[in-house]
Length: 87
Image 1: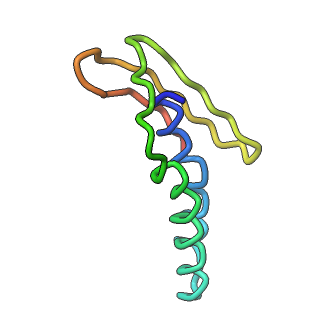
Image 2: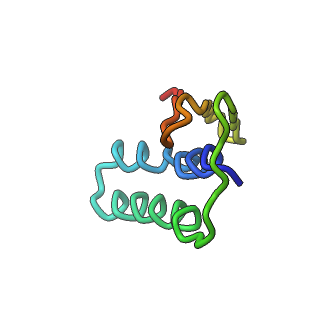
C-alpha cells in the first residue's frame, strides 16, 4: 500500500460528514461524525510504514457511492501530493 492509497482511504467515507452537516438532530450528528472517525481509524492505526510513491505516480479511487479521488505525487523531496476530490 502506498501513501496515495492511504490518503484515499481516509477520504472514502467523507460523505458521512456531509450527512452530519445536513442533520438537525444533534445526536444523529454525533452518530455520523463518530461513524466517520471509526471508518478512518483502520487507515490511521496501521503500524507499518507505507511505501513512498515515486515522482509522477498516480492513484485513482472510484467507490460504489460515486466518490472519486485522484492523487499524484508531485515532489520527490518530501511527501507532497496533488489531489482532486470533488464535492
